[in-house]
Image (cartoon, rainbow, N blue to C red; front, side, top):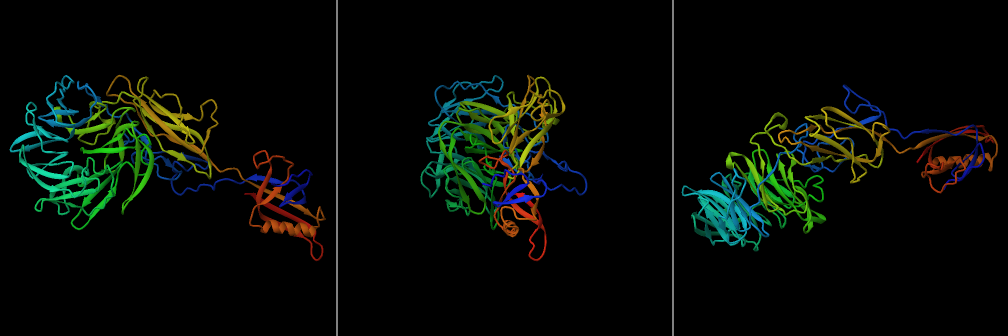
Length: 624
């Protein structure tokens, strides 16, 4: 610890006392270099202040950014983020209860003759779109439904539900036939119905009710996770079987299922809901998704799931149960009704890392995510402590384009758009009635500086006393948010930190915002808000420069020569040296203890010649 100095006109440098000529000069030097602007001014050109203006068109999944990094992603939220203004998500309609009692899972949803059917456990019922009811039981399946398919065979259109005990089909919705041929998953290809059972045995039928065994997966029982149709490397449409160990492609001539060249590590959820969408095959793997594009001589595999970047919030992570294609999005059903107890990473050869999870049961959420080949956004999220999302179906049944999905013992539907529609340019959209929100990433100043939030601005439209926008902020990784007053008027709103009465700012090293939107009773009206623009100041931790003129005209404590030798030692020392000029008694180098460790950066000496060592030295020191 540097020494205490009790005498006037005295300092201690590296534990050596010196007399001084005049006072010690002190100045703050921990300042950023000035900004230089070439060309037109930008929003961050202010000499002292900085601007953070995040955008969200890059999707969800970014938890933390640093100043200067691209900030085009949100962390999480249910607000649509593909347009400049944020609005409420589209209204999800929950259909009436099925009337089926007891504990069950809605295993599959299907369509026949412009109407929707669902398997509530083993009970099949049809939805009445006019009365919002599911009617009476139409069939009892031999087991829980695992898949559903609509197909045309011999000029008759059928709906079939696969089960662990066979498959059940109908052509009119009234008469249902059970077939005992095991069919965990179904597909239609080459004018034939194809099925694959839990053992990996593939079969086909060209006449409903009559099946022929075809090929056997060379894998243990329980390995198959889906069956679908896509193009092979030669561009020919064939069958693919997704498994826990990767993709297998069907060779019709040899009646074989061959492993593809794509090397995929084992994962218990590999391939669940795998499918072809647009020009590619998409294969889920836990929360990850692989995009697989085949060519004549090679294949391209990329990772594009919602587990990239920082992934999802811990209570939103889970398993993708199915992928479903729509006109504008690839839909992922995420089952988060189990929460991660530990997170692991496993490498994938040539394409990056996935984040896997080890699960504990019975807590969490479910969600529906959409990917438009550029970014993921949340289409819908459930409340907690509900049964998982289990099935979905995209349909134009009842002449309305919708995503039907099963969750918490009920079936709901979400309106879909056939075109890319800006919600601010269409008046017929209906919006969520709940409180929906969006979380920005943390703006992390880092350890080398401190931040001071001064003000934040948003631009709001279509607001009223019932259509409101509420902005809140949290600092320093806290889960507690401080809310500003709700916005009920249109235009630019600026909030001062912490408030307009005492706008002294809020110190932080990390800050994030939460945006909440609420509508009134009119379903077609939503407030809209721009992403927040934060005005803040970056400041380095305080460091000081000291300069003092040492009096070396005569001996003091030691000889002049010894003082000069000690000063040279202090100047040439690689380590910091002690410097004191106050009689402070603190035990730590804090704001109340004016004793320092410094670098001696300059010592300008005036000294006589020969045997006369006397003179002066102007010493400059910088706090370490």
